[in-house]
Amino acid sequence: MRSRWGRRLLVASAAAMTLVPWLADWNRRHTFGPGYGPHARWHGTAEVIGASGSGVVMLWLLTRGVREDRRLATWVAATLPLLRYGPFNLTLAVPGTSPYEEGGPPIRLLGLPASLLTQDALIALALGGYVLERRAGRR
Image 1 (cartoon, rainbow, N blue to C red):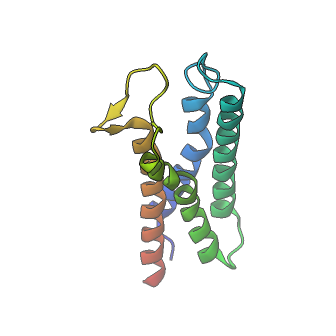
Image 2 (image 1 turned 135 degrees about the horizontal axis):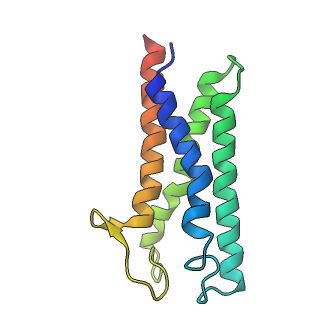
């Protein structure tokens, strides 16, 4: 038996992973900002496309009609946001890094950097959905 809420949380995480990078990073404040040099734009472009690609793979894994290996497909889909965005939390330990845009005011939500909070929310949605799916599968 599948969990509708588990599946919904996983699909919401996948959809957000596909769309949010374009909204958050593909603009004049970030990837195309005046403070971003060609190499920074190269990284920004790769990040947006890579994150969106991961979201598309998640959606494909979650919506394909194959019953075989559904458990594995769900696990892989649930771990993609963790693999993609989890390392951003570790970057704070590297001297000279910052989650804030150059020259812009720090944007915080609930006392945390907004970018990290958003990414961690995508991870939490996926992992929460996975837990609900697993519980439904054991009934």
